[in-house]
Length: 418
Image 1 (cartoon, rainbow, N blue to C red):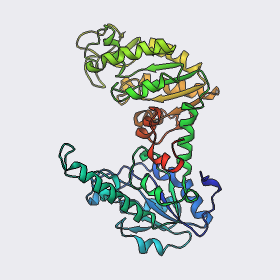
Image 2: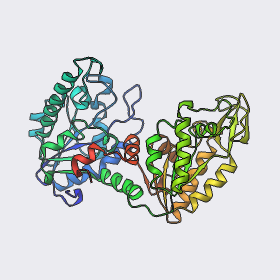
Image 3: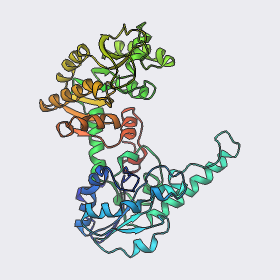
Image 4: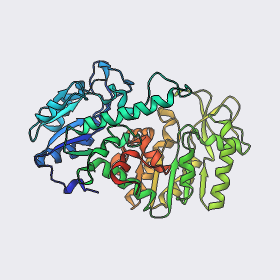
């Protein structure tokens, strides 16, 4: 693998897959430029070496159709401001040969939204999977995707993937394009390198005790993650809405709390597997219950197994937090994905805030901590502790699939399946 930091881009054109899928308001103005700022070190390195930049990204889900509201032209000025230089714009990402060829060292070209072409995602549009013709349509689309990727590759001498948020997708710009560059001219960008290193630190090189904190609303969305972690962690804390499925499966009364009846057998299997593997699986023992799903609802702490009818668990109670604090502060490696309460409501954000503090405190004491997943990142930012943990992942879905043990196509296209 080529090391990005050691590569000299002087006189070369680099096509870089970035994740500029930034949120816009109704006026087309960026409301959070975190992703643009995150890519800056990679892009500045190429430019400072004397290379030229071709930037490609998606925005939203246009499903193969042109949608002006999802045009990357809206962010060209913001990218220019971040890079301290003008940014040219190619209004058609598949017809930018001349614009790319004209680029001089130090110049930047931003391509239009890749997903205006269905070939980027490589999925047949307008045909159901059950349709007999789907197989042929999929084959043709795969061929078209390869041609689309080859066109993008033809613009540059070097390919750099710095978009971890899309690394779990085998799209034209995230994986297929790598087939058209030799090993010496394709590499991960600085942001991607950090993401891969962070995941390896917890999944392959963890110091023990290793604790995973898995929260969020549904067991179904984290089932594969939990199963894979059981072979790696010493402690598994399960909180948030998904915990109530485990409680009900054991005969608890959970009132109106969120749960998945069809996942109760799986919950019992996980409890049994944890016991067999010697993993300390810690569920909530006390919840802050509410009489309605509202920030202004009545609140009271109750035993997790005895939530009154008409009430629902909304946040982790103090007794749960006391248990979890001891576990987290005694850990050497910590993975946190998912809140332990409805932290969007101020009156039910306390538990998640305390978890964030515990993780930060453990980090200050020498633990390695990785926080990832949209809600977890939002939480750690909300409580102002993002700079007090070891790493905050930018890719929710990609991070989850990596933790689940799946190969990420965007990474494998560069590194192989190592």
